[in-house]
Amino acid sequence: MENEITLLTKEQVENLDILKKYGKEAEETDFYKSQRGLGIAGKGFYWTKTPDSDRSGSVFNVYPNGNVYGDGAYNTGFGVRPVIPLSQIYRSKIKLNKVLESSRDIVEYGEYPQFVIEEDLEEELENLYQEDRLKKTKKSYTSMLKEEKEKYQEYIYQNNKYIRIKEANILSSDCDEFVNGRKAKTGETYWVKVEPIEWLIDKKESIAISKNVLTGMPFSYKDNSNYEESVVKVFLEDYFIKEIKPSIDMEKIDNLVDLMFDVYVPKEKKVKQKIKK
Image 1 (cartoon, one colour):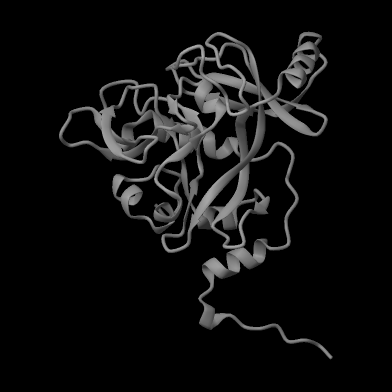
Image 2 (cartoon, one colour; image 1 turned 135 degrees about the vertical axis):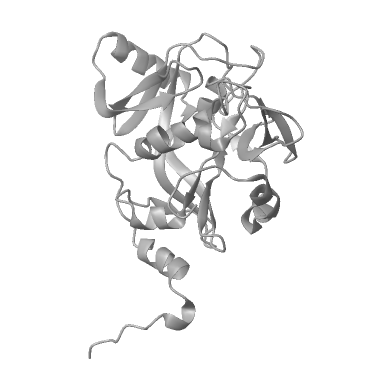
């Protein structure tokens, strides 16, 4: 796992120190909900990479209450919670945006469509879109909910970036809600803001785990529980890891070097800088 983006294993879900601190459950994003994501009380379901040996074609996933169960790999109600090595953050050309806690357990790194915007701004964006007056960036985001991949073009407006979901695929009932309280209905058009991804940092294992369930998709399009042959693996390695690179670079922050210095250099090897008189 040293150089790859992947999913958590069942064993990691149950034993990682960072998840013991923050909980195994993960919050859902509106983009996940719009991709047929099944959430309960703001929490999402997410896949692990561990097959359920007791059931053919079944893979363990984590429920909103933090319990781990096996479900059919072709189910579309579950989502993706990516894991990347810290070394990838450290060496990447993508700049770290912000350390969110003094404990340095949570950082922002990369960006992805996440939450539906308010109706007044959405109406403004939709009008500009219909008049072909919205500026496109050079990036789009890939959905693999179905075998026919769908691309969501990124637009920029007043220094913020958005995607347009023409027909949301909501698995829950029409009375379901997005994070901001707006009703979530199948077939409706929504605008989703592209925002920094929050990652939980496990320094002991040298990995970063997405704080949220970011998108919904089946583990596989068929009865397959082997991660190496899964659709999720293709999505993470061929699309997601490239698409989180900002179309417009984020500014580098001062404590980036300090954060990575703490992670990668043993304390006894740190050398204080000499102050020139």
